[in-house]
Image (cartoon, rainbow, N blue to C red; front, side, top):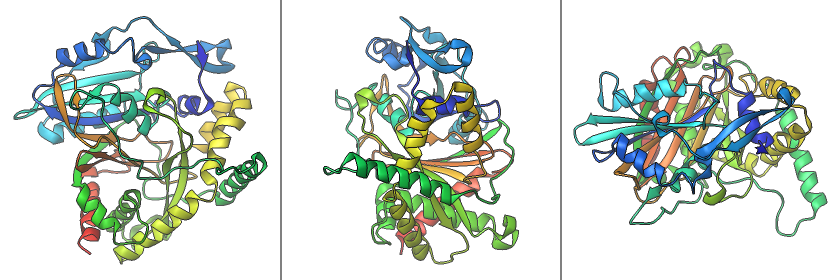
Length: 426
C-alpha cells in the first residue's frame, strides 16, 4: 500500500454529493463494440494495467491521506456494464447518459473506474461511457491510461503534443535557487490574483448534470488559430466560449455587468509517460476571457496573449507547489478543509481543458472508437466545464453543466462551434 500523492488526494477532498469528481469520456464506436467483447479485452489487461485493480484504503482513522492497495482481481460484472440508451436515442441519448454519469459518485469500496456500453445507439453504431475518479488521474492521464488498452494497426497509438503547452520548473541548467524563486513568485502571483465576483455559472450545485457533444474538424480549428499570432487550439476554444457566453448573456443581463470570466485551464506541470500516467500531473492556470468584445479576432488575440503571459509567469509552478508540497505537510483533515476553501467558485467561473489524443482512431477491444468527447468534472459553485479532445482528424467537444446553471447546453455548445467557424472563416 502507498499513500496518495497530495495532488491526487486533492480531488478526494474536493468531492461531495453535490460535486462528484468523476473524469469521463462519452465515446461513439462501431457496431462491433459489445459488453462481453469489451470485458474480455479488459480481462487480458488486468495484470499489466495495475491501475484497474487499485482500491482506496483509509489510514490512521482519517488523520493521514488514504492509500492505494492493489487487489489481485476485479469483478468485471461491476465495472463493465451494458446499459440502455436513454430517449430519444442516438447522440442525444448518449449525451443524456453522459450527463447522468457526470453526476455519479464512485463507490469507494472497489476500483474507481467503470464503463457502460450502450449497444445500438444508432444504425451501425454503439457507444460507451468510461468514467474514472479524478484521484486516479487527470484528463490527459485518462487519455494515456486508455492508450494502454487501445490498438491501432496492432500497436498502441501515438499522440500529438499537448496543444495547451506545459508548465515546468526553470530548466536549461538554472540553479535550484532560481527555480525556488520562480515558485515563490508563482505563489505570490496567485495570491495577488485574488477572488472573483459571481458569474453566470456561479451557483450552489446539485448532482444533476446536463451534457452536450459536438465535433469540429481539426483543419477548421487550425484555420481559426491562424487568425491570431501565436494562438493555439486552447485559445480558440476559450475565445469561442467567451463569444458564446456573450450571445447567451448580453451585457445588460450579466451579473454585476461582469466584464471578464476567469477560467481554469489545466497545464502539464511535471513530466510523465503513458507507462506512468496515473496521478494528477496538471496544475490550474487562470485565464481571463473578455466579455463584450464584438470582434472575434481581437478577442482571440487578447486571450492568446493573456494565456501565454500567464503560462510563463510561474503561476502554474506556484499552484503545483501549493498542491504538492505545502498540502503534503498538512494533516489530512486540514488538507481537506484547505481544498474545500480554495477549489470553488469564489476564485474562478468555469473549467476548460483541451487535450491531445491519438492521431488515428484506435480500436478498444472489439470496436473502433470513432469519437471521444471529454466530460469535465466541476468544482463547488462552478457550474460549467468545457473539454476538447483531438481524436483522429477532429476536435471532439464536450460541455457539461449544472442543470440550473446551464439549462440548455446544446444551444451553448452550438454557439461555441459557430464561434470557431466564424474565426476560421476570417
